[in-house]
Image (tube, rainbow, N blue to C red):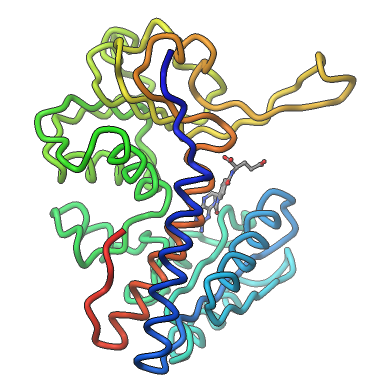
Length: 299
Ligand SMILES: Nc1nc2c(c(=O)[nH]1)N[C@@H](CN(C=O)c1ccc(C(=O)N[C@@H](CCC(=O)O)C(=O)O)cc1)CN2
């Protein structure tokens, strides 16, 4: 049976160390890390995530402001708010919760955030830095950064020569995750809906990352014995066994079967998800350290 990787516990450890470093920064420079969290509309899941981000920021001792904008807010008004936050010296990190309402061009919004405050790591400047292997000055997107930390907890920091397969090619998770694994000297393959013999390819992976957004798509017999399996999927599915109208969360991996084969595996919930918010706090602290002219800690 695989070791089940406790993402909640690792996230709490990261947050404790962010708080410790933030306290030190405040005491030694008078600079308090500041984050602005922006949400447009009333998507229930986004509201939960944004509230959790604001709460964790406060627990880390950050200056935290939340901007809640109506669903029908114009793109121009959102861009104006970002412009104002870009110029605010008390704010070191700007987070615009995704998805945005359909009438707003998310790409334009992301590219308006100053790359120095882009703690989500979605701006082209940060994407380009990561893509060229500059992992020390890039802001790395939080979910892949957190996933990488979990991989390192299991396999150690030296991943050289390991074979990694990332299933999913999104800009937010799949591609940056592949770049991080490549920067760590893994041999990386990105798989997607047109990949031939996906089960066979997955079976070659020492590190298998599932980020497709399809409930339980990766089956137990796709997993190489002893592999490290990182499940990035968060899918809510119907659960009639729990009662009428009830639902439950599952990942992109068929956990019960994969657990019998893998060496280590992340659960859903409680795996990668909590790491996303912890890494956002880590990125915000790093941003504040840079502003203060101090060497940022590495997480
Ligand atoms: N601007 C951004 N928007 C979004 C991002 C992001 O990184 N930046 N990621 C996701 C949502 N997200 C954070 O924003 C996020 C998703 C899930 C979790 C989490 O802890 N999940 C729990 C389960 C929660 C539940 O019960 O529903 C878990 O996996 O244990 C945290 C953050 C999209 N938008």
